[in-house]
Length: 204
Figure 1 (tube, rainbow, N blue to C red):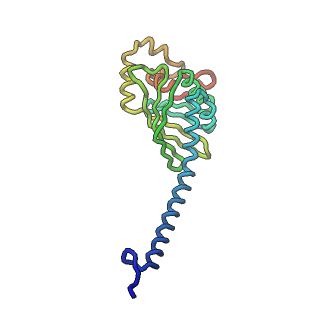
Figure 2 (figure 1 turned 90 degrees about the horizontal axis):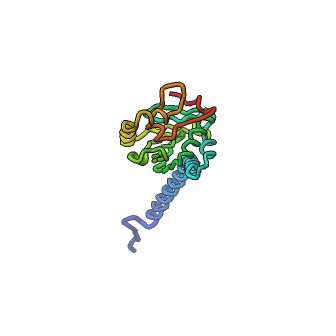
Figure 3 (figure 1 turned 135 degrees about the horizontal axis):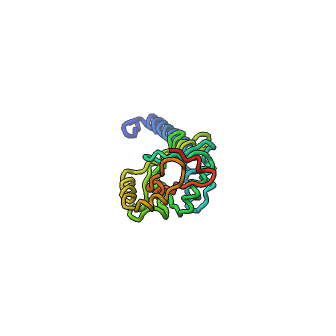
């Protein structure tokens, strides 16, 4: 009597191999899902905070920062540190009708990276939206550092717009911090004008 085979294997061996393959696939999917769920919590919270900013509500973003958290804008290397300064930073952007378009979230342990496209009422028309690569470090669910690196193309447009602006206008647009004046391109790109108690936390 001929022995029944499937794909050249005895039926029993074929089904054993199939069961093992399915088991490995299910285990792989479960492991991947668990890892994705663990990494995505920070992304979900950041996405929610940016949505709130676009709705002119700064509280979710501000409370996401640790008390010692900081924002750094590169290549200007300007730092905004501490709760009061960070609140003033985002309030100024909301006052300038800032708009945040966030994409390409990637999570890796305590780090989340994404692309930020931003514009506010002080952004020169010739510049349009300013593009950033953002690198966020979180610990225990709170932001420790928020580093925004301006894309080279956006920097070139901002610099060109600054060179065309009258010197008097440039100087009058800058906050008084007691140190070197912030470049107009930084004010236009990020709305980085802080007031009151937060002013002293802006460092060069």
